[in-house]
Image 1 (tube, one colour):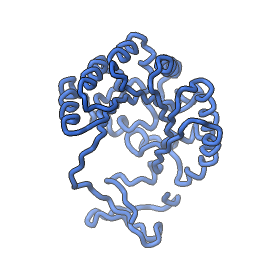
Image 2 (image 1 turned 30 degrees about the vertical axis):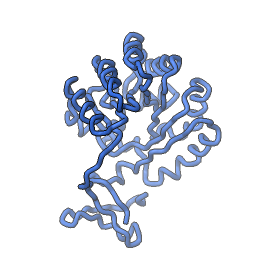
Image 3 (image 1 turned 60 degrees about the vertical axis):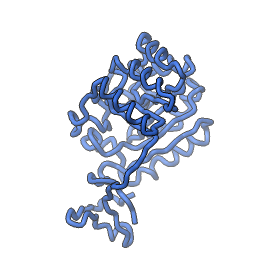
Image 4 (image 1 turned 120 degrees about the vertical axis):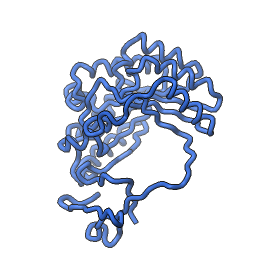
Length: 280
């Protein structure tokens, strides 16, 4: 982590950050990926529209209007090309992908390809509480390849809705989770750690174990420094955030039989906004 109070400057001519004092002579430089890659997993952001406005959303804020919307035919064309080139796993994201009424049909289309191993939806879970829409998704998943990852940032309604800025949606998310868990679907939880919820990590895990014991996969992440997260630094952590929340996270791990994944990012205040980062 970059120490508090340090200012980083990016030398555009050399594409290097001056970090001698911070990393003891090591340099950080923005790096590009010029080599050809053949990924087996594809994230498709089918639409930027969403029925929530999370304080750390990467799509909204300064990025609003940049992601747009894909037509059904464009999504299907991408699926054909991806699986045809050896792709195996597809993940639909957004915005909120379940706002698309054509999503069940797209899932059914993707499952027609023998090369597809799995398909997943990253969702806030609110529309999963719509039983007809839920039935449509289940009906589309004829080969049982569908997994659902629900973003849930607190088990406490007040805190959850203060982070999603969408009052009245917490109960819908919980009903959606319950519906798909009860139907035996592979469901995981994605939880963004903020200054408002990090002390509740043990309680959050305890709640999941008690209420939804079938859920075996929980991922914790810090806010990624894009979109709303750059506008709401009060929700992000200062550079010693790992130290602040580590004891709460370790308590959660000790008490939990589920797999607690980690996907931790630096605070938006400390994250360069140009390119990827390598420490050399």
